[in-house]
Length: 247
Image 1 (cartoon, rainbow, N blue to C red):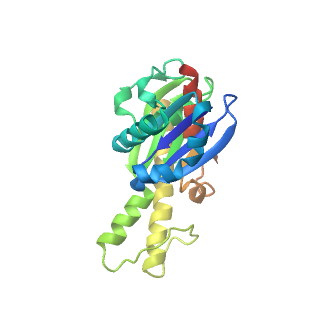
Image 2 (cartoon, rainbow, N blue to C red; image 1 turned 135 degrees about the horizontal axis):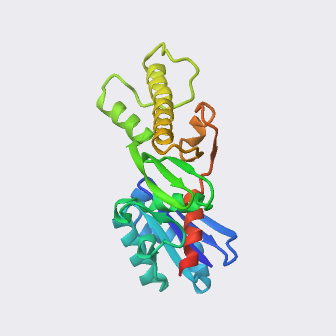
Image 3 (tube, helix red, strand yellow; image 1 turned 90 degrees about the horizontal axis):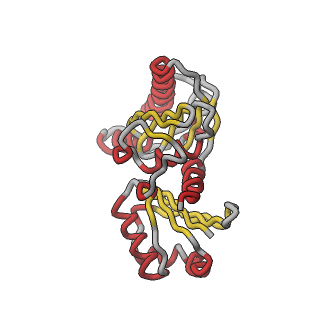
């Protein structure tokens, strides 16, 4: 079996797959809660299956949490863990930028969509809103913009008269009160951000792209973005599964 994990700023996914790459178990952790005691409670399934596990690979954008998980798995389960940047991924995708400067999750996303023939823009609505560009089998680079949740939390925590609220799809551009005005600003503002950046990428590269959305808010925006798109919330995991072929 494989254990693969995606360690993000907000959430950590740890998945168990068979050697035939069939999903067996998915465990969702809150990244800020990760500790030895928390892992003991949450990773009971991996304890039971430790003798069947062949490879453990992580994508991590939180080095301290990866180090903690890596140490925990080695000390308690005798399992060695690797991060994707420990490997050369040239066989899976060509990279035209400095690999050290690209988040592991973004590299996994690029590998996850890469089919060696189509061009892709991946929009990830995570802690940051990221755009990554894949042309044929080459990763060209990307863009990092403020994340939806982070921006909304910053606004409501800093502005005394704006209450905490949940972002929703809105039809009307003009808000009739503070909450509806904020929702409109974030909803239509991020649609404008996404559409504008996609247009600029297309003009800059003179290419047509397939658009893939992922991350927590992808479902909220997909029907209002004018470009045709599809959602794949497991794209990072798919990239990790491809990387298991390297070791």
